[in-house]
Length: 213
Image (cartoon, rainbow, N blue to C red; front, side, top):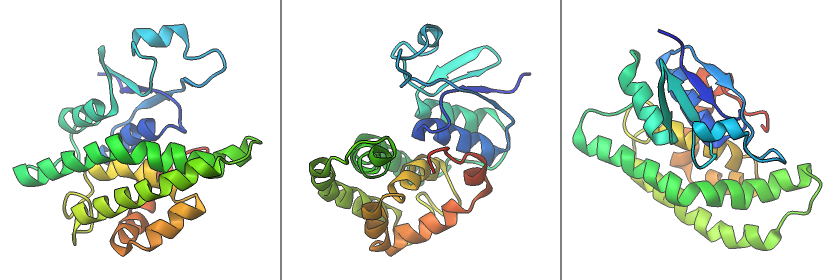
């Protein structure tokens, strides 16, 4: 049996989500860099792995997958190690709900509209789009409040141990926290901030650190 291969870029939120799942399970793997934002676009060969030219993609003993949610569930179910999905139906449903909220509402607002404009734009030599940031902040407030409310009093999004919801959230908040507006908003939500403080120091986070951090 060969080690799994993750195709994608180390800076990618969803590539990091997959890598976090592998690290938390203790699964050796290889990361093969694919930059879909290269000037020429995704490499032609990559479309054989992902018809839409996105990342991550994944291969394990000839079995190919794309879409981070499918990959992380496969990683949890195909390998030994700490479980990353609750067995109890209500907690499992809550985990899946939180992942859906992150994918559908939080990712674009927190990462593209705020982190990219506030942090990456100046690093790339262009002015931040202040109107885009201002328009995104109310949506970010809704996202952060909703996620904290769904987590409730428990230390992790789906219970007493880190689960897939935490691994989907962590790369998003790693970037969001780098923007001053993101930090200020997180600090005002003490439950979410406690979660972030615990998540940020996990070994899996150190081992998958983004080159943009």
